Length: 91
Image (cartoon, rainbow, N blue to C red; front, side, top):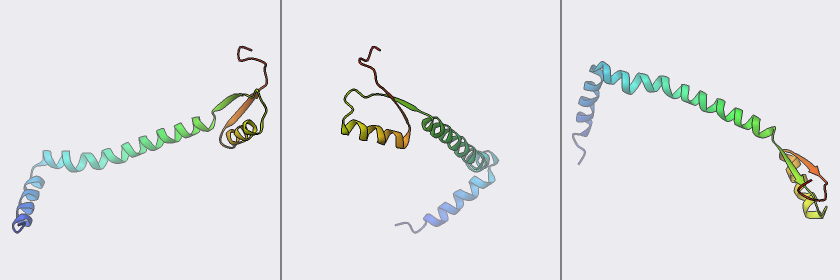
């Protein structure tokens, strides 16, 4: 079924290599573009991680129960949780 496929593939690859426009578009540009895109994505991920690590959460602890203290402990393990003890949300 694929008996002449290798010969056909070799012929087409030779034609692609002979044309400098195709060589530039399919080989050289991706060799430059993919590392640059990888660097930009890595830089943006690092920036997002740094800003997430500096995030703070304001916690209104109205019951001071066991579940709320466990939740605040969990929040403090990953980010900064600021506990506010006020009588109402408006304050």
